[in-house]
Amino acid sequence: MPLVPTPQALPGISGLFAFRPETGVPMRALAQALLRGPSPLSPAERELIATFVSSNNSCRFCTRSHGAVARRLGDTDTVDAVLGGQAGAAGPKMQALLAIAEHVRGSVAPVPQALGDAARSAGADDLALHDAVLIAAAFSMFNRYVEGLGAETPPEGPAYDAMAERLASQGYLVQPKPGLPT
Image (cartoon, rainbow, N blue to C red):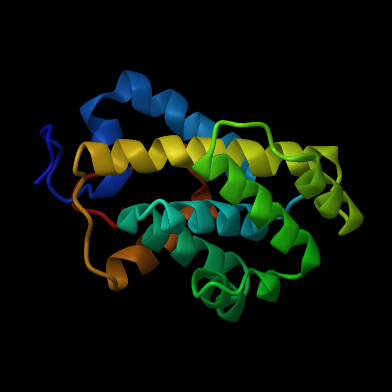
């Protein structure tokens, strides 16, 4: 049960955004900029970073919702392998960026130069490094928001397919209406 009242049929972060739109609107804009804005990383790669961070933060809602989007935009086998602990399945560049994301998720210390050098050696540029760090930091915040307020988390299944369809096609700026797929 959520710690604050959220609209029925708006699970996860969408319900929290509806509860307090004055913070929800800029948070949606941040998600849109990070996951769909200009970047050397594809939307599928950025969704994979968000999914990986959310999984390691034990945020079931964000892992399931962004995992569904990453699968829709990218490769299901890669997403499942990364979530199963095989970051190398995403390729050398993404493996290096996921190592950076994990560092950011778990520590406020600067990313070690060796992790940055490994990512650059694998083909990441400065913008990719920046985006990986900011996605990891933002999703750590989003995960704590969802879990801290006990947002409703549907069981795995069709609800996440509907979310993935909407997020993949429309992005993050549209607030879903209660009673419609979130």
